[in-house]
Image 1 (tube, rainbow, N blue to C red):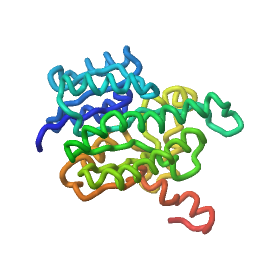
Image 2: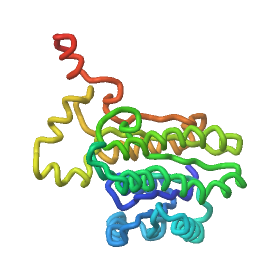
Image 3: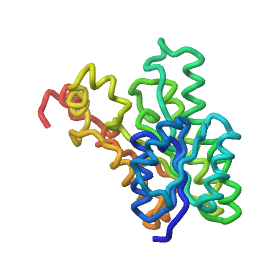
Image 4: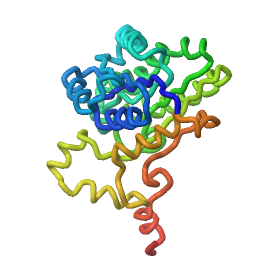
Length: 259
């Protein structure tokens, strides 16, 4: 496979690092973007690919910061071939606890941030008539699992993916999204410390009886940006152990029978 320049936002997080690690292993040049400079430096050092990996501090809630980061990535690695919008986070778990600032913060980071990154690279991709955009959404965008502002933003990200696929498709640009379920990351650290059995409790809702790890997302990402997926665009691919399809736990309660 030909080496490409791939930009990953939110790269210092667990999923971001898994994405970067996989892309580097496949022989690509990677620009890891993150707004947490200390975490970014640590992640770059951990991945240990100084020639192929570039760490760039960038805040996806600031268009100028995004533009500068993309320019730095291009100066080091060449034109951006693949954009992976992975930056994200959550604030309030329920509507009743969500203040206006919380709502706006989630939308800015999880939806508007992705749009800014697309805006920064789309003209170059259109001019070259090639490129791939991959958005890391969530099952929260298609169902009710808490975190209303985050979920609304992820639903918007799914719709943005479809618009990108249709409007940019004639220029040879593909756009897809991955919708993970629960993923074992450091974001769960505080809850795991309070309740070490949290993942065991969650597993019962998943038909496959297991929880995703970051590498599960990275593997699917590698496929979607690769040549084997050349005719796939506008797809929202769940990586959720079957959660979005249904639950044997719920079905058991309804039917009164074992599965």
